[in-house]
Amino acid sequence: MTELNRRNLVQALAGAALLGGPYTAQAQEGRPTTPFGFADVERRARDLAKVAYDPRIPALPAPIAKLDYDAWRDIRFKPEKAFLGEGSPFRLQLFHLGFLYTRPVTVNLVRGGVATPIAYQSSLYDMGRTKLDKALPVDLGFAGLRIHAPLNKPNLLDELIVFLGASYYRFLGRDQLYGLSARGLAVNVEGKGGPEEFPVFREFWVGVPEKTDAALVIHALLDGPSLTGAYQFTVMPGDETSVAVRTTLIPRVDLATVGLAPLTSMFFIGENDRRHADDYRPELHDSDGLQMAAGSGEWLWRPLHDPRERRISSFADRDPKGFGLMQRDRRFESYQDLEASYDRRPGYFVEPDGAWGEGAVMLMELPTDTETNDNVVACWRPASTYPAGTPVSLSYRVRAVGGAALHPGGHVVNTFSVAPVASGTAKAEEAKGGLTRRFLVDFAGGDLDYFRADPSRVEVVATTSSGRITATSVAPNPHVRGLRAALDVTLEAPGQSTDLRLFLRASGRALSETWVYPWTAS
Image 1 (tube, rainbow, N blue to C red):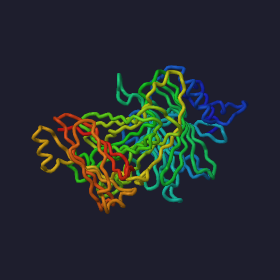
Image 2: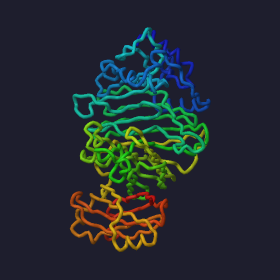
Image 3: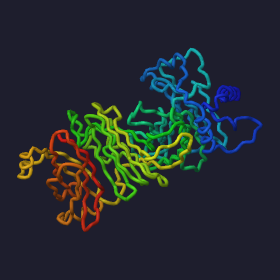
């Protein structure tokens, strides 16, 4: 950027400091400087929260405003123009505005503690089929950013993390492909009393790393109708890339429906849900279950569904140790998809740093008739309302997890649901007018391989919130090197629902995580 363009950009946006323009204090000549850091973004969030949220989006120049998806995707950032490439392992590229991404985002580089905005230049891009009849303004902004790093091979730059759209971001570990997404924050996911809000990251500060830095630090300013927020993301590439998140939220209004560390994914078909099974591929999902590590030390596994209508499940807890949407099934044979490679999608597991108090992990599943729609959301819902004007600070880590189990005990491998065979018990329940369903749950890992030799020592501990448990059993399953538990449940009438829980125990000691499952008789 020339000095003239730099000054033009600073002057064009400096007057909008409270409205989310670039941080310019250190760009002013002749003034003492202090190293840019989280406190600066936090101060910006506090100032921004004092004024009303401005939902207006500046009109894009004509050639950009008309872009459809194909034309927008055809605009490619030139790799040789990438930022941060001064000996560090990271490279920064910027997404062009257009198509669905019309809200401009300011991106700054932080070098030696000084933050400087990046000016828009069409020369950064191969514009593809889009022709520009005149230069676009240097303060046009960008749609988002992405970082490349040598993730899979030391001599090859792979996409590591992307921030694009509202407060969404996605990142990868080694040998993983994009699937689910994380978000900075969710507001009113259930749509109580109005539509869901989608706060946006309106400005980023990307630290220029030293040659020896293994992690990259990115700051972001969040803005939305109900709150503002300061964020710091510390990205550490690896087998399971992790993102350490630090945030301070400033509510503009009393926040009763906030969702912390939200995750968004897709579930269409699985072995436990074959409603849309007219496909050669056995399973179609980015995530197959909700994993939760409760504050009590109990581990829960809740298989996902494509429900017939919206379903919201809540798992109350205090000071959770973690939760996430996982892709536990890593076998190609489960998907048979040569292009989508669902077996390589990561799971994201959120690990709070410190005590988060009372609340619940909320899981929302929406009906979908296609694999292209995200229809699953998981987040932490605090029990207490966040008062307007009172800052809330918290931190956590998100890991991109492969197929490895997250705890040392037995874990759920498969869930099947079938009509029970016409045994004497089943016939007796049918005679009473009840509806019975059999659930088969495969567990593997921990000490379960040891107990395969004598499963009679293992107890199936099962409960139901309504109806009756009419039979349980356990048998060795050599194909998973574990055990298969069977559970028969009877409900009184069609339309009745229940929540099931099941785990394996021996000599008073839990051998497995707890399988949790909702069932509605039909």
